[in-house]
Image 1 (cartoon, rainbow, N blue to C red):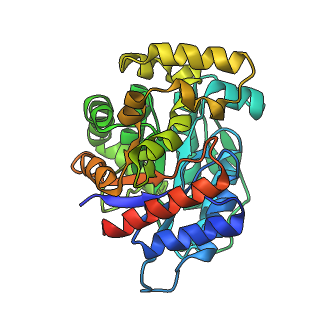
Image 2: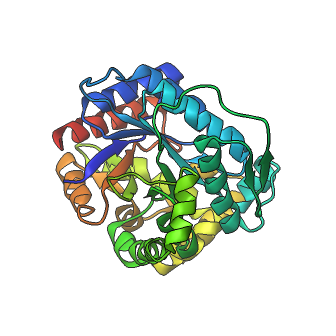
Length: 359
């Protein structure tokens, strides 16, 4: 059966951690911390500290960044935060990285977005090299590092910390298959998208990894690039809106779809699904001054049905079951864009009840 992961929400950090504990009690495999309105590493630290970590303890939910922005901080700082979080969580941490889109990097964080694919490949290599230790640490590429006379003086909790990459385009998805321990889906990734577009790209990357020369594999292993024995972890994702009234559930999820419909980078995928007109309307509304999280009224029910899991508990359980065999896990998040906090709480409670029923 597919593993149920949760991306908890909270108006305060305390509420978010309480939601993480509730997800653990419900049997979630991993709680994931995104990076948008909060910092993913800080959120992951709070979740790690607030959930079970005693050896052999019941639950021991995994904690991951889902996802941290790969270019907004140095690769070495990313590696150090990763090691710290694995220590704090007693070996439960998973580093999820993604590039973000050009506007987010350039306008929000003041970092360039040229050549994101090789930059992300370099980031993974540098993080692994720093985690492996050794002196010197040298990597030359689009992103480079040259460190001499430095060693981390603290013993690592684990020899290997899993790295996941998020990707939408085929080249980025293939990179995850080639160099990472897992892949994390975009929040709007229906089963057909996973089957028809994501898996062929993943298989391409996994084949490149398999076909690497024995010498290259030995070199990677010496740099700490060994992967988890459990194999490659495919994590689907979905906004999950659960309510006894399916119309209420769809209304709560509509703003999530509208938000992404206003982002130019996602327009081709929506156009392929027959919703180009919604993207055009969302872009025009955004240009006129409407907030991106308030565009749900532009999204028809059939688009909500296509890109989210929304409906009664039974309907949502049936939709989740469609991912079985296509993914190892599905990361569920409550609808929060443009939804009052009291409604997000209601939706999250229903989501966690559903997660518990699917154990």
